[in-house]
Length: 222
Image (cartoon, rainbow, N blue to C red; front, top):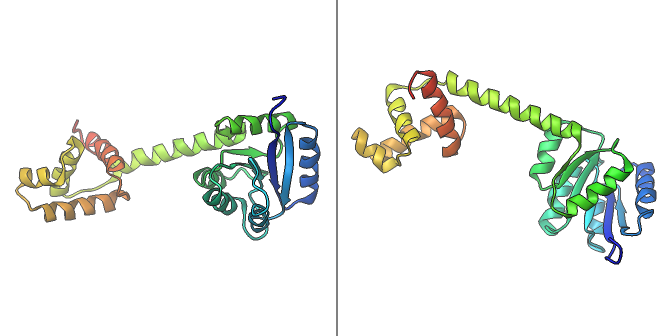
């Protein structure tokens, strides 16, 4: 990356010793430049009024505003900034929340220094960065959700009329077509559909259709 402008980096962490260590690591790279440091989400937002970096390395747990909220707030104001979470916590909830709020990666602090620098470069190239432990946690979470999803389809109970509508929903019919086929008003159909969605726990038609397909299959209907 010789000849290119230095990548501007902000460090956000409540542990001063870690900030100093990261500053030392990054200062050894001629194409990386520390432009600001902060020890809380609030302080990070204040510093961003003075200087906007290319990349923010963000801790997750800090006094006051934590890393998830800070990530969301930063990206609302500066959507072009890359935020990489760098933390000791590999809780599933933190990982999912951080990525959902726009973080470009979730890294653990035991990451090798060279790999951290490489992660900064890769994040700027548009890649999503996850350390091995984090990726494994996400994969396990997805498997758990899929298992729950499968069980839900099998455990649901519907009335005969709701089953009629479920079959039509799976076939792709809209409310008007359902009403015509079942000799009901569209209002009545919509009420039944609301009840079906409530039992499933979603208002998303695509998700509801998948669950209903599993339910009907469990009943021996293909």
